[in-house]
Image (cartoon, rainbow, N blue to C red; front, side, top):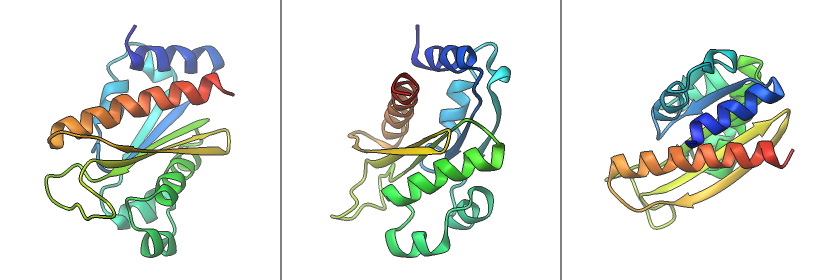
Length: 157
């Protein structure tokens, strides 16, 4: 069974809902989840919040968080996950924010750096990853990691 099917099955069994807030994955995460038949029972909406303004307005990331830590940070990923869950009234909020490349990297925040946030019933967890590859590969790897992270959060509940 693929990861998106496993996630949807686990959410369905728990009668949980999920929403996503995506930056670097640009809808690829929610698009992957939507590949699963029956997903409409657990997914009611998703947010592509590429710009900081969208992060603030749609999923309640604090302006001060973005100024202090940047869009690509543990703090922003956490606020995105909590905020999208709140905005969609979902049990789980899953967020991605990172630098897919090829440009935009710095020594402190290199290309391939991705933070994944998972808010589950008000508890939030964040993972930090550094993926190798071109832009498309970084995005795909981030989606796979996000699906695995969501599953592990559900299993650990």
